[in-house]
Amino acid sequence: MNNLSAVALAVMATMMFASCEEDDDKLLANYIEQETKETVLTVSPTDLTMGSKKGEKANFTIKCDTSWTISGQSEWLSVSARSGNGDTQINLETLRANDSAEPELVTLTINSNGVSQSITITQLAGSKPLYVNLKNEIVMSDGFYSDLEFVGDVKGFHYACYYADRVRAWTDEDFKRDLKTEHAFSPEEFDYADYVLPASSTNYVYVAVAYNSQGEYGPIVKHEFTSKSSFTGYDAFVGNFKKESSRWTFDINMNTYCDRYYHYYLTDDYSGNLATYAAYSLATGIISSAFFARIIDDGIKQQSIEAAKKDGSKQLTRRSDETAIFFWTWGQNEQKVFSGNIQWDYCGSSSSARAPKRQSPNVDENGTIELNADKPTIQEVKALKQNLKVTGF
Image (cartoon, rainbow, N blue to C red; front, side):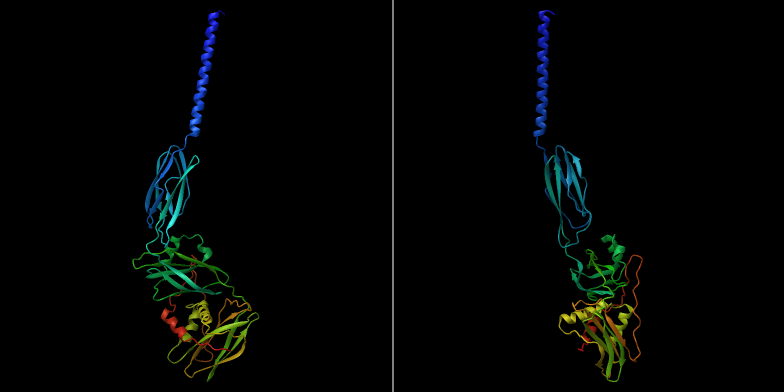
């Protein structure tokens, strides 16, 4: 090879090396630029307020120069996309009305390459709270009672009691649809809930919904409870009633673990039949045992009655105009735990007259316990309470 060829080859090699070195420098520069370039991510707006009704719509905008994802969710809000690339408008829609007195809040976080932005979305509260609240409940082996508190412009309400396991999968809409087929009550007629229960030691759920004068319904109110056992061992049994010319005679027997008992009684006279009404109402399922337990519980709290601690043969003075008597007891053990049972007896106008045997309520295929619509109104309950009698033994 001559000297000229050798020089040419050397020049070409030098040029190729320089070109490769330049390409490597460009690649390295591009890599460094990509690694050090900050991801562009903005969200607008960062706060959104939506109306309280179902089907309210809103949107926000993501501006991003690469891919992104959204985290955070709520059962009341629909989000049109959870991931994407580049600039995107996200559409929102409320899936249910907010019937509560408090707003609903959810925060969505948008993430991209370690950069994050957030947006807080608020669903306004309903214009006014509207619901039925339970207070001072009493649960027995065969009955449930609760005073009712009405919140908001409640014109009327529906309520029902279900076997809890049969409606475990029901949504609020399922309950609302079923409740609308049940009896409607007004706060002026009834300020209490009372149910005769078919079985002891069983899980139930009480459900109520209120509506206002415009026909708008509030939220579903649910309360699950378990009926007490019917085998408590601390009951005070009453029976063997007899009507004599100037007295009522009867027996009370406290069983093994009964330490004390409380009691009330009603009588009929020529102008009224409250005792007969109470006895037949309890026997036929118009009133539950918990209804009478509430009366005793109120009397204890007001210190109007004291516990009796002795059983045996008893007697009460009978006025000449008294034609019937209804007497009931509620036992406690040494720990002052109440029995799950109310024990009672009735003696009618003749010494052998007795109230009918206790009946159990019907239950439909959905597990809804039949409600007796003939329950005493507020005024009738007041009449019962005003005529109660109690005496110590």
